[in-house]
Length: 380
Image 1 (cartoon, rainbow, N blue to C red):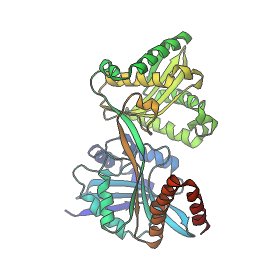
Image 2 (image 1 turned 180 degrees about the vertical axis):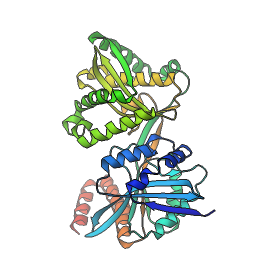
Image 3 (image 1 turned 45 degrees about the vertical axis):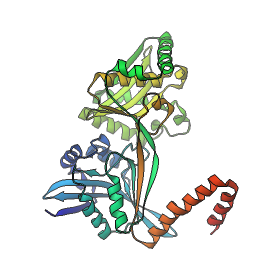
Image 4 (image 1 turned 90 degrees about the vertical axis):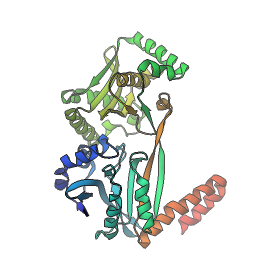
């Protein structure tokens, strides 16, 4: 059977794909909420603005085998429009990958042939926030490279995760002794302020009270001071609220709170999906910093996971000391860059992946020399 490639450009067409899209996700290499139809729908409604939606689909005999949601953007490069096909991601996206049915890697070849012959102009494709173990992204890069396209990979960093194996008692014994002792001591000290309580909100009717209280905690941190807290932006509040409502309706929502004497002092915005727990946003009241409320809340969340049928806890984000107190395992997060075969695209590639790299190496070897080289380059 031949592979049929489609490109959809309207949100209405995308909405109609929900059932088959999610069936594909559940039979794909990466079954996670961040690539489900619901996630992209809420994301586009919150952040799509006036950008152009580009959804690439591959079917065989009507059956969906591949889906790649993109957004078309353009910037100015050397005074000319430079068209970018970018994953539906921003700083509030936690993971992304194209959705590919298991054992159908061959479809990537057909998809790439479509991009080569696509009538609408494009210079660069950027796929952000891709977990390196979620899909064989190297195959996509190899197909592009074999067809004389420049490619590049930027390693954003390592993201910690915890395989949930054995029981809670056995797991805690594997942690560093000093860390265990600190947790016990700080929980005991916290109890001097009142009863310490751990609760989890799961339902839509809890969202209007639990979420604003949690976002208020985040705003008390340094994020509130520099304006990056969710509560500082109506758009972000709307995104996380709608996402919480959808997650609650699907049974995924897990908004956890640690309170003392009836006062919330730590909050985690989490999802539970396909036997995985995702910790998306954790925050604590800086007034209780000495008591490590964030780590105490993490301990309660992990203990709950060990008591349920959770196979993995994904801490999301990049490595921090706090996350590495719980696990030493991390997965690589990458961004893929694939350039079309145009002169403007080639110039962009040479600057980003060769000139900038060499300037960085020069800086590391001789900072003063690098400054002169950079000035000369910028001057040109």
